[in-house]
Amino acid sequence: MKLSKHYLTSPQIQKLDFEFTISEEDIKKSDLIVSSEPLHVYITSQYISLLTILKIKVTGNLILKSTRTLKDVPYKLDLDDDFTISYESNDDDIYVLEGDEFDLDEYLTSLILSSLPIQVIGENDDESLKGDGWEIISEEEYYNRFKNDSPFKDLSLEFDDDQEN
Image (cartoon, rainbow, N blue to C red; front, top):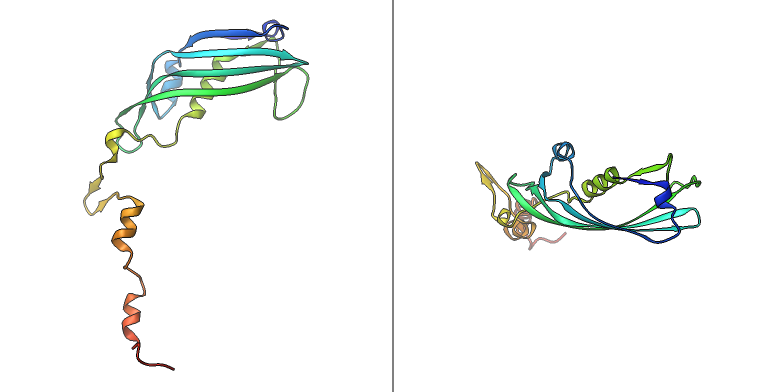
């Protein structure tokens, strides 16, 4: 969906409410997304003194890959974003619209992909993973197992506590 400059600069508050689907091509580019239901997008657009402020809410369900087991994990998406469009400013923090259209699909795809978590862990991924000579344990379990395992423990046996210099 493309929004025209005329639409974005309307003096009235504009509201958009629609379903958005991430393209198959973008899903294939992502290492995390397995599939996506149509996502619900609600946008409020307000033009104020040469700036358009978009308030964006995206909700829906995705299926992501677990980063531990690569199994499918349901993920509830709930994003809120504010985006400012300028028509004359050269400010680095504000997007400057070049041309007469704003590509909303490209922006939404970028917003969704950048909001995905770095690690996806499913409900059943909490089980300890083990292999031949290794296992994944929590940090707390590590400290409990090795709290008295000092690299200097053998050195303390060499010195007699009764001797004083």
